[in-house]
Image 1: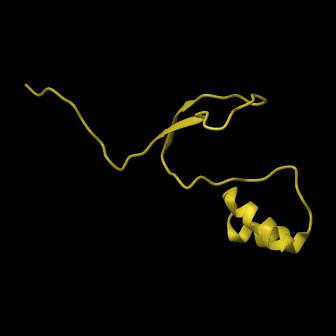
Image 2: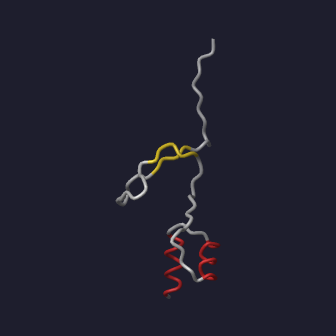
Image 3: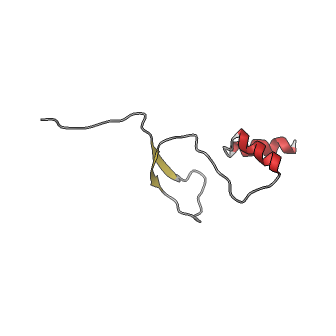
Length: 76
């Protein structure tokens, strides 16, 4: 049960199945971990800096995707 709970918690932190399996095999916890976003796009606003405390629900960053592109122009 404890192992399943740990796997579940890591997956809730958006770690991939491969990352979780690598942790199981190595059995070494690293102080650095890569987190991959489920969203794609460009970072247009970063609201926090390293070392800052954030509360639940605090917007950390804003991204802009290129799925829809609007162009406003004047042609003479």
